Image (cartoon, rainbow over all chains, first blue to last red; front, side):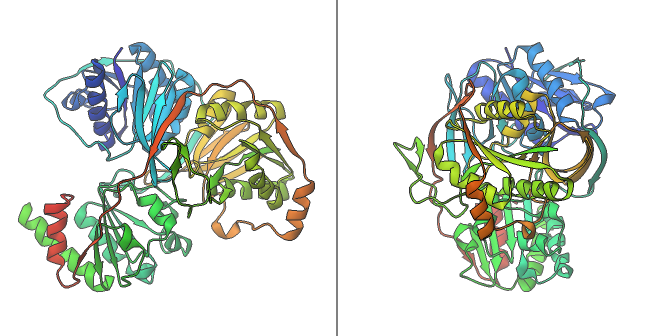
Length: 320
Length: 248
C-alpha cells in the first residue's frame, strides 16, 4: 500500500515537476507511514528518483509510449497503481498530466482533486487544500473514495532531496489501443515553457509593438525564464497565442513573475495570481497591477528593462 | 452531426468571491452569472458547425433552476434546444456521470465542453465524461475540424501545440483558439425572442455518487502593499529579489 507518483520525463530526462511530485509524495507517505513508488515511462536514470524520496521505481520501456497519449499513459499508471495497491496517486499539473488524470480517475474509480498546493491537512479523512475561483480563493476538499488522486500545482512544494535510494523494477502494463493519434508536434525546444518555468517574464501593450520584444527575451534569457504576454498582445498578433497568460490563456504558477507594460486587468491577474512573487514595471502608477504586485517600478520600460538586464548580468557574474 | 455543448454557469470574472455559513458555502449574493468563457468559445465553434455543416446543437447544464438564464443565453446565441439536469453540481465526477446519461440518451456524436470552469478550475469533467462513455478525448483543444466521422484537432501543450487525428464520438475540453474572442456572439433581440420559444427540457438526475466533498473555503491572506523601487535604483530591485524575496 505505497503512494504512487507519476514522474514525467522528456527525451528520457525527468522534468523538474517530476522531482517535485516525488518530494511531495514522500511527505505524504511520511504522514501515512508508508513509502513512495514512482512510475516512469521511457526515462533514463530512474534510480535518481531515490534522491527525492522514492524507494521503488516501476520503469516502463515501451516504444508505443514514445509520443504522449493520454489514454495509453492513463492505462500504464492505472496498471502501476493496481500493481502496488496504491491508495494515493500523485501527479503534476503539466498539460499532459492534467490530460490523463480524469481518465485515470475513471479507471481507478478514484476521487481526483487538482491544483493542490499543500500536503493533506488530514489523511483520515483525506483532505487537501487547492486553489479555486481562478486563484481568488482556496478550497479544502475531502476525497471520499478508497483510492485518491492528487494533482499538485507546479512550484507549490519545491524539491526536497533526501539520502534515500530507489530500487528499479521493469514494469510492462498492458496498453490499450487509442483512437487519438499524434500527427505532428510544434514546440520550441530551445525555450523554457511557461508551465515548467520558475521565472516568467511577461510583456503587455505598453511595449508598443512586436519589434520591442528583444529586451523581454534578453531579460528572460538572463534569468533562465519563460516569456509570456497579455491577452491584447496575443490578440494583436504581436506574440503567439501559446504565450498568452491569464484567465483564458495559460495559468502561471511561477516563483517570480515580471510584468512589463501590463496594466493588470482582472482577467490577467486571475491567471497569474498563484505566482509567488510579482514584479510590475509600468509608467502609470495607477495601473491596477501595482495593487497585486510585491515589487513595483514606476518608470518607462524602455529605460528600466535594459538597466535591469545590465544589473542582473552583473549580479549573475558576481554570484557565478 | 449531433453536437452537445456543456454549459457551466459561473460567476463573472469581476465578481467578489466571498463565502457564507462559516466559510462552507459560496456567497451568491450580488453575483452576476455568465456562460463559462471556455464553454462560450466551444459554443461559438458549434454554431459554425451548425451553419456550415448542418449540425444540430444542444446545450446542457447540470444545476438548479437558477442556471436557466445562462442556458437561455446559449439558446439566444443560437443553440437549438437546452437540457437542464435538475440536481446540484456537487463534484466533477458526479457531473460527468449526469452528462454521460444525457449523451447516451441523446446519441450525440460530438461533446464540446470547456477546458475548465473559471469557478472550480478542476479541468476534470470533459475527461471523466469521455472515460465513462468510452469516447475519444482531446483536452486543451484550440482547433477542431470534422469531416464525416474523421476529426483533426489541435491541442495546446506545454511550450507549443500538437495536431492529432481522431474520430467521432469525441469529447473535447475546448478553449480560446477554437474561435477567437472577436468571433464571440452577443445575442441580438431576435435571438433573445427566439430563445424564449426554444425547448428547455428539465430532466431528473441519474444515480451518481460524488467522490469529493468541499469542506470549507478560505480567501488568501490580504497582501501587503507593493514595495516601490525608484527607476534609477534598479540595484535595489535586484537586491530585494535576491535577499528578501529569494527568487533569484
